[in-house]
Each structure stands twice: as C-alpha cells, then as structure tokens.
Length: 193
View 1 (cartoon, helix red, strand yellow):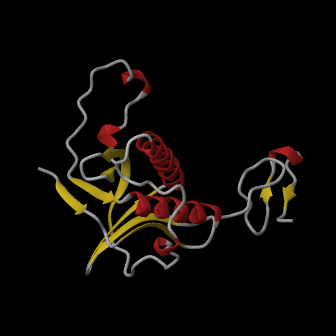
View 2: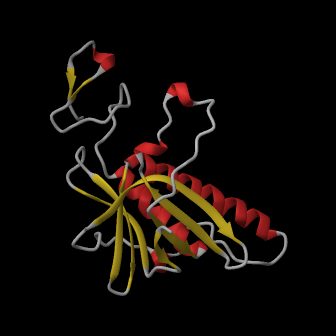
C-alpha cells in the first residue's frame, strides 16, 4: 500500500523554483496547515502539467456551459493569485515521474496525481513491444483543486517557466548571461541583447 500525500483541497498548491536561472530546481508544493509536501520535477513537466490542466479546464467549461453544473472560470480569479515564494524549508519527498490529471464530476474538482520517478518504469527501446508490469509506487502526491485554484496554479506555473533564461532570438535555445554557443552563428558565442 503506497503512502499517499493527499490534499483535498490544499490551502496552497503552487509550482516554484529554487536557484538562479539556468540552475533552477523546480518543485510542486502543497500546504495544509503546518503540513507541507514538496516534489521536485523538470521544467518541461511543469510546462506540460500547466498546459494540460488549462486544456482540461477549457473542456470542462465548454461541456458545463450547456447544462448548469460547476462554474469554471476562464481566467484565474484575482483573489487566488499567489506570488509568494515556496514554503521553507523545502524538503523533497521524491522526484516526480508520471503525472495524471482527471476531473472528478461528483466533487467538482481537478485531481492531480504525481508518482515518483522509478528506473524500473523506464522502458528500453528493445522492450517497447513487450508486456511489462509497472511497479507499484511507494508514494503518491494527490491534490484535488477547485477550478479557480487550478486556473491560479496554471497562471503561476506559466510565470515561473517564463522567469528563466531568455531564449536566443536566432536558435531559440536558452541563453546564459555570458552568452551561449549558437548553432546559427557558426560556433560564435552570442550574448544577451
């Protein structure tokens, strides 16, 4: 039986970072009272989670518009905006692997499940066609959010992602303050404009 870090609903659920641009560590963090759970993950995972969550809320909003049900805001309510730093101290429970999103129509909440990264869950190219059994996770980070809180999470996650290094206008790769080796500049180093 896995350990479930459950929040239904959390007082706070945010994406945030620690460290300077280019060396940031990304976290999902939930708080309820004095209990805080932090899970580390990759920038791309935060980006995909925010995009999928936004798409799911749009789908629920469209399906609900025809027949009552729950009100899904089109944008994050101002009173739910959260620009505060992550709760300190940050103690990582685990590194995120698989994440799932769903809509619970009875509770009228978004359900986010995050499972730990596991080497055993990684499939090698020669194993793609095989019937493999996924190992039971030891822990699960489970968060249930109202539609407004989910939109606020998306809004903050987008700001966190954009706060990193600027993209090179020529190749699109992130640029360090000292510049970077741009593939479009034939090996010459480009600097921030």
